[in-house]
Length: 324
Image (cartoon, rainbow, N blue to C red):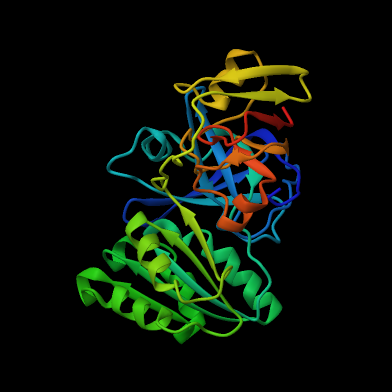
């Protein structure tokens, strides 16, 4: 499995604190109303906020992994919000409760002596616990953090103590300095260094291009939205999915996803983004060859063919056997 092996829960948590961390960014501190400990998590993990039966969104945990009593998430009010961030900013105040599912991690921090962190805007959130982990192990690290204006960039005060390890580039002050510095940093592969990047699609594309000469496995990305994935030329119009746990076999037609067909058959499947970004619908492949069209798994994980995101991916083999 690509996600870390720790306990997932679904629980109603209370908003203990709500802080304005930057223009249009609020940080929510969530805790169990009974005072119970929350599950352990690792840097890069996210949780689902289930705001209604039809409205679930994912947000990276940005607090300390050492704290078992609280989870922190930083949430940007997206001007093109489909309802999630608008709900958070309008409805989730101190004392209110929200259904939370997780934690889940498809952006785990691998061990390395050196890290280059790159954050664009609210993409800073998963970097904070990663920096804490790098500091704890004594790893060398640098962060390049870009945004439209300093007033829109959350957690700058918390990052000040790291001095010149952190490079802040605000577009209204420095123009294209962010991209220029990023290109210079990535121009030549750095020995024993992993690159972690989270931010808008344009930034991820630039970092992917910048890292083309780096060794395979050097770059880890977390996307806000799905990457365009072209269907392979030999894609199957229909295929069968054998649901081993449930003991039934389903036919998946061209106009439906594995998730759609499984849900229609009454199987207990979890899903959220339906775009292959969040990893909620991940299923183990027992046999068969997945046609991986998600934006969660790395190329090596797709090649390993151990799990599949059933909201977007299909099958290259006539029959796919899943742990469903």
